[in-house]
Figure (cartoon, rainbow, N blue to C red):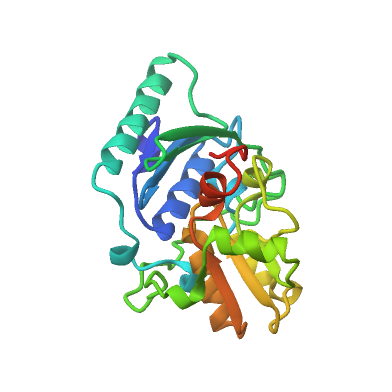
Length: 263
């Protein structure tokens, strides 16, 4: 299907199709106008491996099924698809007409709760498995990842959560714990929390050896969604004392340190 068209707009909502579209676009040398939404947040970019990064440059491998939230529980706010879809359509029009500055090589982040936009620059990964110098993926295959009905990771349990105020108190008291950041390196360049260690969510399964199963681990991300997935994955992997920092760095900026940049 893709071979017959000049540009692709990816509005799919599952990882299997998202990776398949990306790989096809890279192999057929087509631009991929990507858009995704989650709860109150959205992302848009143009992945064009001929001149910049592809989707796998940013996310080399899909997360394990155990880190994918149930579709019905994760959900999105009703107006968000219209906002992100309109931005995606605008990028397609700009690319076709050669008008303006497109999002090629950039990732646009939108937070509906704070009504803020942020743009991150993307770098092409020379070791990318599909568009790098020595690609390991040379044929198309569908990744079997679905929103499983038994994936109950977004049910709220307040016993497994810690607020940013409580985290701040623990820091001030000098308590012993591990502060785990599961965001991406580009996000850390914008802001971070003191003495945290970075293990991006999609690399967590391969880095469990860096964490002590007996330690108290407090996990955070931008808004609390990815950290909730990481928390449940760690618990299933034998870690006994893991809590999710509710609200993530957005809550920290709002309640603890207003000078912290947000995105």
